[in-house]
Image 1 (tube, rainbow, N blue to C red):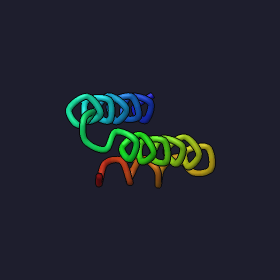
Image 2 (cartoon, one colour; image 1 turned 120 degrees about the vertical axis):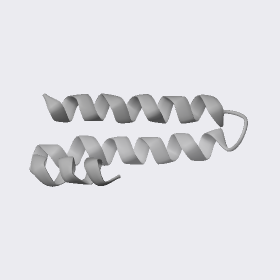
Image 3 (spheres, rainbow, N blue to C red; image 1 turned 180 degrees about the vertical axis):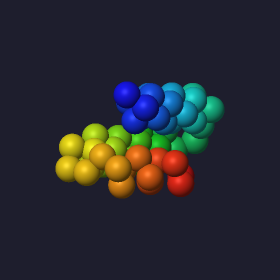
Image 4 (tube, helix red, strand yellow; image 1 turned 45 degrees about the horizontal axis):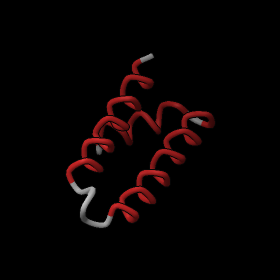
Length: 58
């Protein structure tokens, strides 16, 4: 459950960044968000603890 909350919080931050920088390189930000989101969704399936540690450090 805590990891899901962290993931939702991260997505919320990404959405706010998109809003603020929507006029500057929106395509680049969307690509980076997709890569980060896919990595966050794929890593926990294999090993949940390291992914959670990466979230707390970032």
